[in-house]
Image (cartoon, rainbow, N blue to C red):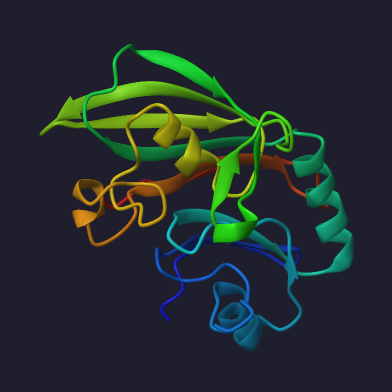
Amino acid sequence: MNFDILHIDEHIIVLNKPSGLLSVPGLYNKDSAFGRLAEVYGELHIVHRLDMDTSGIIVYARNKAALTAIQQQFEKQQTRKVYEAVLLGVLPGSYGCVNLPICVDWARRPLQQISHTQGRYALTRWKKMDVSNNRTRLELFPKTGRSHQLRIHMQQLGHPIVGDVFYAGEEAKQEKRLLLHARELDFRHPATGEAMEIICRPDF
């Protein structure tokens, strides 16, 4: 793997993870961005995750103090995350939000489902960028970080993300990859407190 490293120092590594690669080792598939980086750089800790099919910005900590400091920012929702996605069809309106609780669909794991009795709070704001070829490009601003949140929330709008093998119909699966990318992440450096503003544009 030719690492597309966006930032590296003695405390953190910020990577542009490619689509199709796990963030962390799976139960059966052990190949992951975490494992590949650890082989080269040594001690590494998992701060957060991206779906295997999602590309973009992911942060790994290089020591336990950095891990604790950054994880607290995620848990307290002190980070700013912006994703970019392409949806099937023309989504009406210019902006909006989806506030639907999510829980695991135990019968169809790893799929998630909307449940107003079992689900955990999940909020996604969105803003339309443009429309072309019967597809809508959006900026997505998740307030929470539930598994598959952006994918299932867009499906609930009736416009699944192009390339989504889990929640889209056959037409939306025609793309070779999921058109979802973690484009921006703002957080404070775990050692210096410096404001980090990472931007990585998608290649789709």
